[in-house]
Amino acid sequence: MESAKQLYRWWFGYGSPVTLGVFRTIFCSLIFINFVMVGLFWNDWFGQTGYVPAEIGAKWLDSHYMSGGDRSLLINRIDPLFGVTNELIVKAVYWGTVGFAALSAVGLWTRFSTFCLAVGVVAIHHRNPIILHGGDTWMRVVSVYLALGPSGAAVSLDRWLARRRGTAGEQPELISMWPQRLIAYNLALLYFTTTWAKWFGGLWKSGDATWYPARLHEFDKFPVPAFLVDYPMVKITSWGSLAVEFALGTLVFFKSLRKYVLLGGIMLHSWIEYSMNIPLFAFLMMSSYIVFYEGEETAAWWDRLKARIARS
Image (cartoon, rainbow, N blue to C red; front, side, top):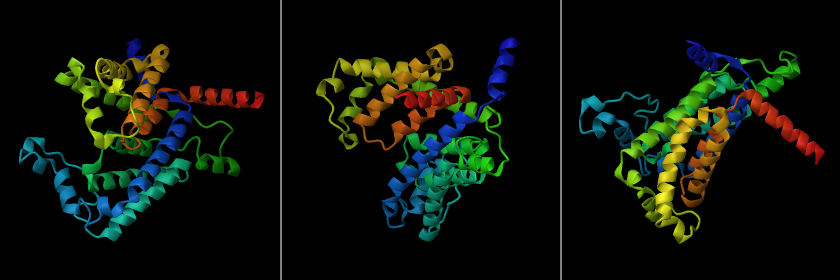
């Protein structure tokens, strides 16, 4: 019973909103950058004369269609732009989402901005699901969670303006921690299920999996020494990836192991970012690691950093 009470207090107890505010700032900035990057080629990806007209995107999203008519695989999805072929409407939603990403990043009208951002991200992602990668899926999930919680309670223009008006104290009010816990739990679940799926695939279990992406030259980014993508290093990187991802799904919740597990995740994603052209994937994942820290820990780290800068 005591363990259940501790879990309840950890999940639903109150704490500092600083970590959630810092995370919102970084993550929504990455959403803004991502949408601007893709928007430079807007017509190619979302225009009716581009690679994926609206009807093709809708068919790809339709699990009933993609499964060959198997109704057991039918999934109902929220698709605000379903059937919309007017490019002016799609452009308005797209660039409106970019604007709400910027507002969410700085924390202005945060409740409204994060809600509109979540709706916009879902709408645009479901408009063309063909081009999405795992980082985009995580972006979509997190945007919804940020809209659910008081993510503007700290590190935001909303709080700065409230302090200017005299309606907020020097320290931000404590918040229920469940929105931050929900993000942390789903991040850990992401890594755990990834490990689970890989373990039941022969290439990962045999230690040969990382040999293949190194030969997909459309993903080439920066030069990689040949010995790092050949045997025996392939065995080390394949099994090492499994070990790190398993730790990120389980051991990361143990405070004494947390920084070592997260360091392993940073090394893993840094290598992916260097060697493979998967836009912003590594940054989206690594920026999320801060949710495993309490707001008090984040604030204390910032105070130590300021003191160190002042001394130097």
